[in-house]
Length: 196
Image (cartoon, rainbow, N blue to C red; front, side, top):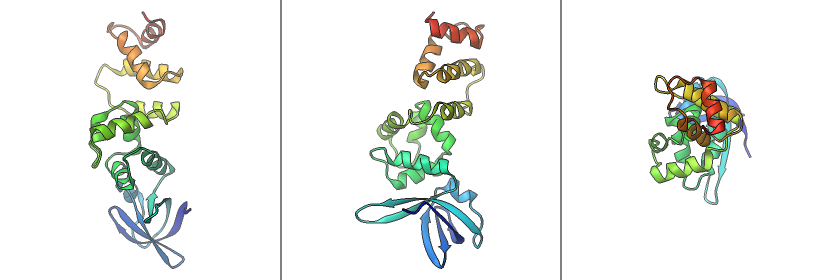
């Protein structure tokens, strides 16, 4: 398996690069997010690789970070998602945006990716939303855009996630007790934990 390529970028086009390693040119498909971070043609680059092998073909997919490569691999593990759709997902949304959409079960955002319909988006969410550590979930959620006034609800839900609750459960618990507009984050957490 090829893990990375260190070489000169011979060609660089959106969605595709050619890396010259010791006189051999490797064609690598890349999402736009990685493409934007690669140096110009003629310069040295390290491209992290996912080597996709099937009975009929082989293909190299390149990334600028381990985080992108991991997300690509997770997406490939979902039934109905192939390499083209996974690259499309990473071209349309950043890894952080994808994580946020997954942990928030945002079907609309996931289905906005070319090649992913509503049912596939639901499958992606069900299969991947619990694949992230609590730290990754907190990071994704802290970057999520909330409506004004919802920051205390988000903070309370994040606190429950850090205590080990699943994101969906934490949000439901906080929504049940969110009626009091004057309640502090601490009050919301206490009410959610006691069920009052």
